[in-house]
Image (tube, rainbow, N blue to C red; front, side, top):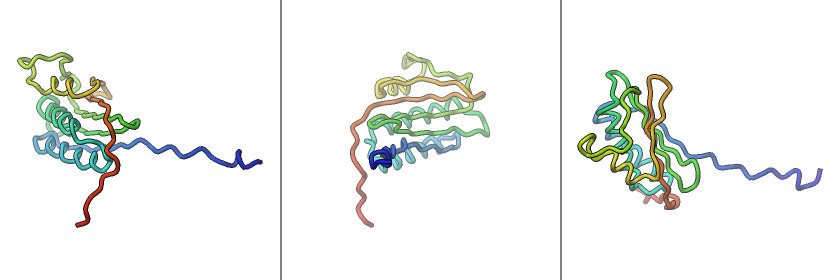
Length: 149
């Protein structure tokens, strides 16, 4: 064997992913936003517009996707450099968001998500779940620097 064949390809950095179940309450929606801010900051991802998108999707899961006794799930992922994917999964698949809502139909939440994200959509399943997701491109901030305490 020569040296070239002994060298291995550089290890690919795994995509960053964070996922957490939260109670389908106002407190759970607030916690989703706070946890997202902490996670994105640690990854060097700009906080805006991510925190607004998380807040809207989590609030919608609590208000429109809530099933008593069941939680919702927040998932954040950076599947490729400069791309953030936000997913909120709830257990009320029959309550689908309107694709092009008017403020009279649903308030401004999904209009905000539509404006702030590059693209968004809904994935149904597994039964009884649905996932509302949004993606947007960002310029990385670099590693977060925290002053010593």
